Image (cartoon, rainbow, N blue to C red; front, side):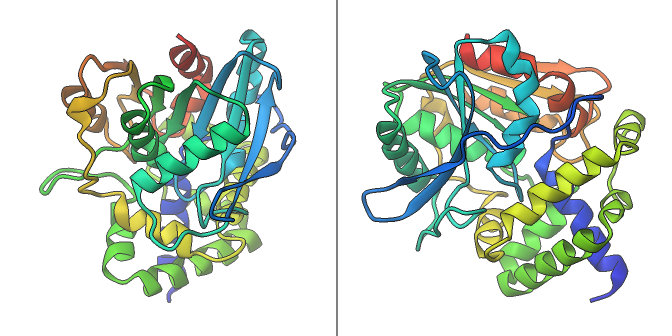
Length: 313
């Protein structure tokens, strides 16, 4: 594989995570990492942030490829929400969570419900970014009696033929058509950015503001860390998710019965903002908020507090 092709894959991988630390704020250390043992014996890794005894539990869904530590971007804003307990999981086969034989969105919903039982959360809100979208929506569909609200930053929607499906569409197609090739390519990309982290910016469709964000080495380091976390025990889990993401998801979004808020930047070049518009049409009562001039990376960085507020209600 050529160096240029590897760099493209690395850039696509960063694009899918959708997160950077706020300007001037160091990435906080992982807080209380642990795991839940599911009834079938699998381990689901998670980290907690905020108030461990908070009465408002928010389960965070990371992007792709990424890991539970992506939620660290939201930690500085938790100071304004002292009653929030934020819990972020590695989904099956990603990070340090055990793989599942047949990954599915409904399967994740059941895993999440079992993890919530283990963590003592009878009711909870859901938040997420980018590639975490169908997982959060599936859980809301499956457990409307337990899910209170859903808040999604720069969400993805099912892809449409003939439309701009964003900067990661190429890798998602590769994952679906030739998963072994996609796994090898992702591993090569991970090795590349591990050696030369600055390479992740070369082919990203960045807004001017996002390019300035990458001037801070801490932001580059954090995003590269998400990528390396996601594939530390193999790329199979990430590629399996990537193959599913374009759709069809098989989710009856018209039956969603909990409040859903979608936050999207008008300059998003990774998940174009038509995706939030589509979801808003599909989900009854969904509120779509558009942030002028913001991109896929800058939105959650600047407006984490808005996302938390939407989840809390």
